[in-house]
Image (cartoon, rainbow, N blue to C red):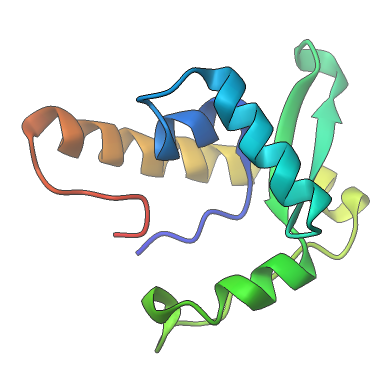
Length: 115
């Protein structure tokens, strides 16, 4: 199982909602942010790309999901500075996991974001 620590809006869209417009994904992410489950930073050098990450509260809630039983609990971000320091590696890991997910979907294998 992959634990996504951060993802761009486009990556999230490919992970969870390809069947709808990206605008719907943006609304879903905004709602989760409003509820305090996730937060975001904006990367200035990439045309205002938003990077989403779980808050401590969001990580705590996700750790209670049945799919997470017996797994190391996810960590929520401490602050935006910490996220900025890890963004290059974090997005590369997410992109790699996304490549495996997309390939599995292309082959017709059952593969979901929490697999």
